[in-house]
Image 1: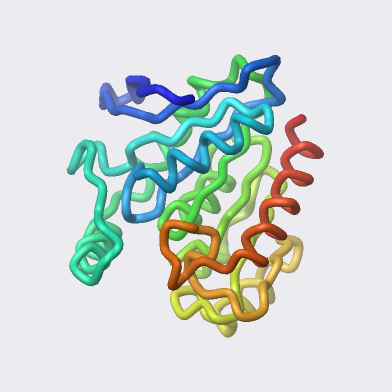
Image 2: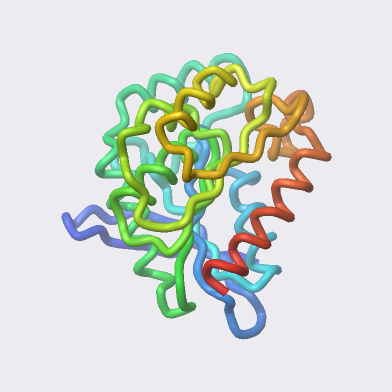
Length: 223
């Protein structure tokens, strides 16, 4: 369903993005912010599935400034590399790239951002620093480090109560600072619960409920 598009950020940085478009008139645009594992089969599948729901979905290569085209395997070595890349990441540059991707799909109408893990943190930062109409953060790994920021659009958050990367005490502390930001907490769901390509992490019940809530939210906020 999708294709590769080339985008150029305001600072001249050129990078690729996976773009999936619906068959009919779009409901709006959706920028999908990747896990630390890159724009892989899972993330392309997310874009394809939301295109089937009527959204123009685009997933920019957020490692494009340092490791263009990189995808990291779901194993111990891949996790170590992904964490190293996240530790070195320039948050502000990544938000610029998300905003550039949003500009590429604004012809579809209002635009939301949705991200997972590393991309979940970026979703929160983009909601606070960029010009999105809505934001959906799935288990943002470092999101709870930024409770002082103020979102510029409606935000929805998903996390499992068995998430060791975004533990319940960190979520509780964030919610105490930002009580206006809604979180859905899924019993027994670990970090990465939405990803069916990782059987050890995938939690089908939580993933299905989170998707239903996300679609309801997106339809309400952007069309």
